[in-house]
Length: 201
Image (cartoon, rainbow, N blue to C red; front, top):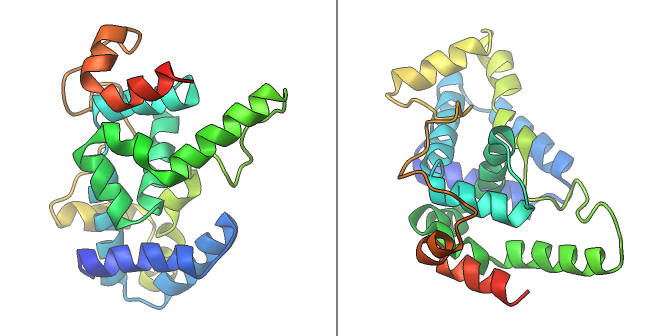
């Protein structure tokens, strides 16, 4: 499985399903039809993609969007960004500040604004929130079924392909230079689009 096939599977899983559980089931079924090598390739591309998102500036975006942040939550946010498809992923991976231009995120921010104004909680449902934890594990069961091996061997197969994931984060694995997210001057310099959005809200 090459990168094009990986992204096609990610995007088809969105087009051909509705709720997140349906999407997970679709991917499970599709991967279960593949060889163990193809499933390991899928996992390799998944890890390569999410690892590209491990940057200080994107972590700042995540914390700003949610109003708080955790390392686990950031991983699930990265999963969600990959779930949006290749175009959105490449845009954000190249320019983290461009995340504020994603229509999917703008819709969620508007929902949050309206619901907070009406004292409605939670502001996002489980289907809506910009985190997708379970998508990160979708290759595990198919690999165990097809390969007949413990899921630990899937990690070995990915590393054998020369890929080492950055998640789970241990606090010092971000790309770029760390900075104080509460520093408005630095926020304006590093993430001007997000800073402008926050200023007009």
